[in-house]
Length: 150
Image (cartoon, rainbow, N blue to C red):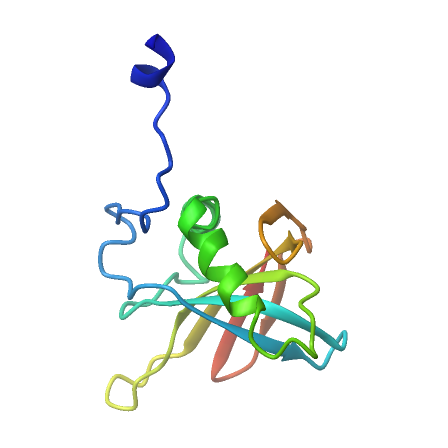
């Protein structure tokens, strides 16, 4: 009985927003094909109406750590695994080899901002999201886009 008071129970509800994720749009789930490694993954896309980071800022790494922690928090919810399992059942001829969480800020022509993405790869067995599969903070950017893979 005491454990009930000290351990929060994950009932399968969507994750609550925090101060950091308060303005983010709700996650959307689908299957995507990655031509680089020729694998199909279940993807969770979260969009932010605000820029995610400033690569030239002094607190860049602290900001990235906070964003990655928030992505990981959302990924760990039972609700996220349930939604990912439903998305995995789409197109059964193409089984999913993993899970990809994408946090993105898309540029809007009127604001002329750069597209920004943070990607995090996870193990996935078709029902539950597993551990983070680190990619070593790969930065891929050009004039219009910046993508950071953790």
